[in-house]
Image (cartoon, rainbow, N blue to C red; front, top):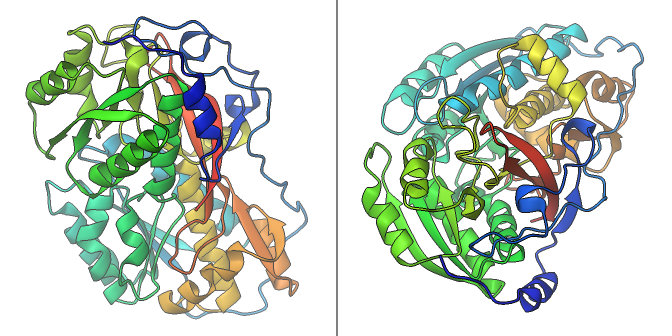
Length: 451
């Protein structure tokens, strides 16, 4: 790997970028600020990577709930709200399934503990989304639609969502993804029925590209999954990194289902990049050992939400120590983690749990606002409950305001939620995490941005 010159001009250039991103630092779950070790320290490693230490600035906060008794619904429905989930329990994103499903189940529980929607408890039906190598998502979607759901939370994978979005929205049902980040959905002809709590990769790409530059990298190599998620994110990472004065010197693609990655690794390493971005799903389990076996230091590796996972059982201790990665959304707070663990005590991480929880709450609140459990009626109220009214952050406090005739502005566990007309979040946090010696990761910084 090449050595680096002084990076001050690069950082100065970064501050001039008009991307609306403010760097915020916070400890995970409200614990003390992370120590300045690994990539958070001022000392450079052999490749010249020296990421800035966290500042003392606080991160996202969530407003407290009202805490008062929930008044009874002023309207009733003959048809109870029924929500399906289309989340991965098999395939290359199966590690994301447990926190997302726990987020859905926690949201359903809290809605029903508060008396349900329009006088009836909400029903939930879970189905596997699989991945793009199978037809599981289509079969699951057919089953969910056959059971009369008004909304489907999922899929996690942008590629999977592309296979079912027309089927779902064409049936007059809401598709609400907690984890789709492909920019392609912003302009999709979805009849106003596709929504998401995860921000477009335009934002994650900007954050990751700029962050690698602030860490001192002048050149970057990328290994990229050749699908809507991978290529879309890579495009935005490259754009941001090059706008900051850097250069992408290698970009190697692979396809879902591939099992051999030596060619991609060799070509990227031949370009001698300062940093390497891995834009993959669980293929990282095969790619990381190939790179470390050829002398790549973990502090040169930057991962993304598709592969940020607990690798404690996959790699030897220290394999990923100092590697960093990004996940859309604010850090999960301790009280939220405790609630999720009560739902699923086996949870190892919390990726997109907040976005899944928020999706359920927003659907339920929009149904209350619409006084209807019909998908198209609910969709017509989703933007309204996300903006312009009195701030609230959970179903009991928000539905209390609605039933008292108030306008609401829901901000949830994933951070602020304000939808565009296209159903995209217009503002969001991107969390930056660092791997520890045991190959699990901890929160380092948050960056807030508007789209």
